[in-house]
Length: 503
Ligand code: ADP
Image (cartoon, rainbow, N blue to C red; front, side, top):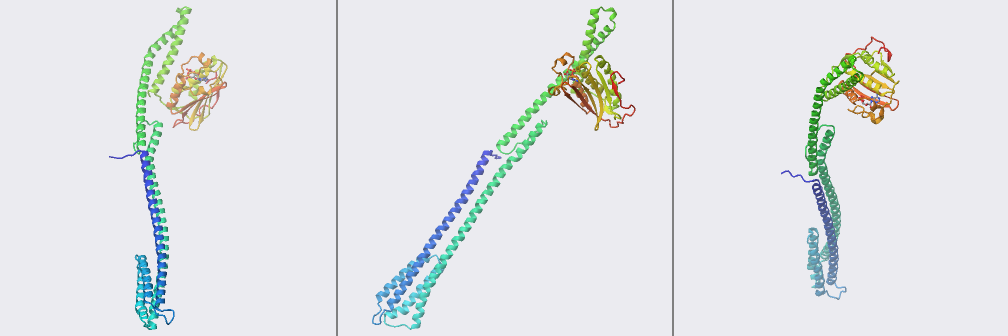
């Protein structure tokens, strides 16, 4: 079984381990330092006591010497005094032995002293007590052996005391270094532990961030590998569930859209034939007014007009539905710009004349050909010009211009009509959108023309945009790619054509 503790459990374990390590190192360090201190104090006390006992031994020996040699010549040495001094020496020696037990050097020094004193007692003190004077050489040698033994014991004790102090210092320093190293090690272990914890979160978190970025970028198939601490693993699972449901919704939406597109396509298609028939008969009727009275001919005109509107709307809907279904076909070929602009200009001219509007067509000199389906682009231009004609006031100025911009040809239709405010510009290419102003509403329209224009331009690999200064007019621009084998059209020089002049 794979154990995967939660983030809080991991943190708790981390802190516990760190706390335990620090506690152990601190306790060991403090305990060791305390022990060193206690040992040092014990040693110092012992050596001072030993020095004291050394002094007692020295005094006892002096007493022994004094007892063996009375102060005046007529006095006799006393066996009792000698024994008492000897006892005092032995007592001090016994005491000193308990203090040197653990130290071989000091024990040896003490043994040496005791045996020197025993030799002195035997070869010098006893003969003196019994009235025999030992040879002076022997007495001097044995006496100085005892005296030197005492000095040597005192010296060794001092040396041992200094050594104990140095040992304590060294031990304290070493222990302090060890404790510091231990604490450093514990902190390092904690650091490794926490960086391991962070690393265990970093990879799954990184995957989540990357996944969210891809999902936001529209890749609904994005899923993340679930892993890391429990909390992050649950986050990963929640992310995958969310992606699942988003994908499900998108699929459902696509299905509904598809159904809607199919429906619009079928209905428009089915409607087109009867409407074409109605339109045709209505036009036939209006053309043969002779047999009709005035009411009938008026009715025939209304029917023809409405049928024409309906026909246009159905064609627009059909175009949009085809474009949505990916069935709107264009056949882009190398197309010279000037003839195209002039053709549309010619078709539109009567409408501008009808409203007393001036209409200018301006095509830059030596323009290369565009890669375009001429009829479709003519349809887009006609739509933009029809709008300018419809929405600009009578007597307004309308201009169609074609220029080269980098590797593209830009077509611009501008007017000095009412224009559009910024908010309206955001929606102008939306389907069925029409400005709410009274002027717009008074003019007939479906709100589909610009949406179709956008589809057609984009299908050519171009882009369309609108700009306006409210109250001063609007400009609609679109760009198309230059034909790969496009040659500049040098036949006609650039000239401006006024409405009414040959476009
Ligand atoms: P329609 O003209 O059938 O309403 P369009 O898609 O061609 O549909 O245009 C959408 C809307 O954009 C129009 O209803 C109008 O409000 C606005 N519009 C388009 N061209 C112009 C223009 N040249 N000046 C002012 N408003 C315009």
